Length: 147
Image (tube, rainbow, N blue to C red):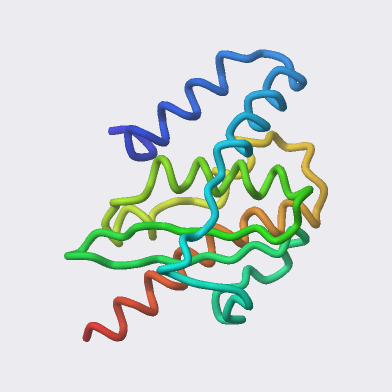
């Protein structure tokens, strides 16, 4: 059994095809350029504080919208230079939207290192892992309100 859902494994396999750090950076920039901000039907500025990712220098926000047991993911990144945050959000949205709670809660924050490598600054690491943690916090909050 694979570690992640199929679409996410495909992203990681694509990244592994690029052996040098500079090539991998280019691929991550391409993902960042695919980033689509949260639609206004889900949220509008000023975004609610409860959706803001703690410690994220790029001022990322996360929404998880449950629909019949599946969750769609939406993001906003307020810092226009937040390429890493935008890349991660685009990857997560593309590969995990439509997943169930168990799948989303099972994503390890080590995913950040698998995508970006081990040379991340502590600040960037905190922010990017915080995006994954925020998804899980919101899923857990949704599950508690359903009980």
